Image (cartoon, rainbow, N blue to C red):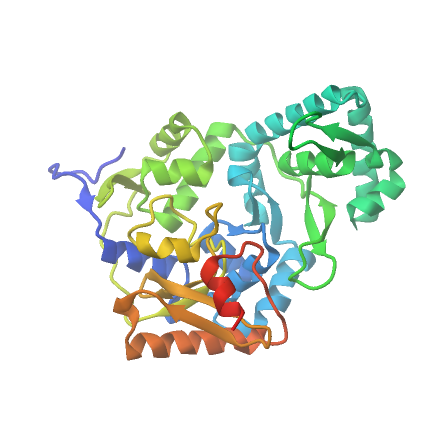
Length: 401
């Protein structure tokens, strides 16, 4: 894709040790690399998984220099200053993003998904004999106006302002998975993918999965190809080197879109154990390992654990059955020097417990570092009980005591 000039000697090989060093430093996981604010964390990672609200706070807390600030500072960023926003993004997944990145994500990944979502809703309504597209457009305009007046609202609150949101229709009639859908549920989902609404303050504490909706922050319309190039550049900066398969998986784009974006940013080829990979232009120089060994306790769905499709360089295949659910969602993980070595959980009494599965990490040094991270997590989490939304075999076992 790009070159360093001079005599061609072939792409530089980046080994596992250097990839782990890049991960440690760029994902703010070592003591010296930790962040001062949630905004710095989100910017470093490009996006935090937001499907489970607890993932966001636990992921931020693992990377802040002062984890006691995790909850108030993350709530400030999300609901006070609005410097972070929770919205649909890559792979039709909910993420927490820097607000300045919303236009890029929407144009690069959201538009295509949004078109499919709206078409699917209209088809399902037509099949069920529900009102047509003109009716839905009228309800949409009314609902968005009501949401703008309220500032933030639940679906039930919006339905009081616009009763047609309560309309129901039968989904997949005659099928084994037949069900009844409410217009509000499906329409708000479509509006979320279209970038018109975002998830707002939760009902209850920061761990709650119930939330209010808010009108999405205004952002300019961007050219799709330019937005894809910018998103890929940011992600490669955080996660390079990455293979084409990694890039296709993380973005949800077609291969042709990935390759076009790689050319647009003049990505440079390197080699890794899996084959050809890419880094951003100018990022081929060696990266030194962190000066001290490090451990981390990351939450389920954390973007570091889920960041690449090809994960053998930091997660041994034999550990996966214990650490993932049947849908491929990773649970809470224990890290030691750049690789996943086990899992952790919170027991009903608040204790943070863990288990190391990797024999190479069963050392006094590793155990002491993991214990220190567990204490660090407990120092701010203790009053709150957190159960991952997607539970994994080892997490369940550890949590049960």
